[in-house]
Image (tube, rainbow, N blue to C red):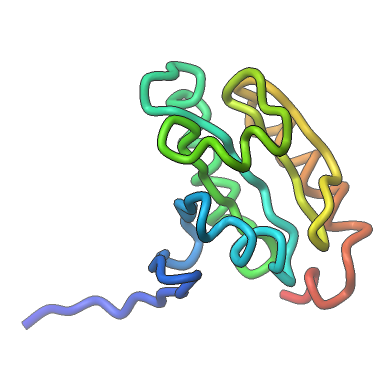
Length: 134
């Protein structure tokens, strides 16, 4: 019998495979995002949004490459409008980079990999040492 050993993380009742994006809702946002010890890249998106779908593989790549140093979280704004409203999200995709519970950077639109990588690297360079340990 063949098997696979996969590591999983548990976030406020959500199971996420390590190195993958995590879907959160209005009820779990505060615990997963704002109380995270790691910086968090939040993607406010919707299934009908073509640019949101276009940036999804880039976000998956970022999640895998920065596993253990950064969380990548997705919030479907149609099903979970509360936090999008609190952060004044007017267009999607909107990406927030949150560090220690505060917004460190905001970008709107489907950004290319190199641009997102640069944005994340800048935040990780100034993040607390606990967040940058490999």
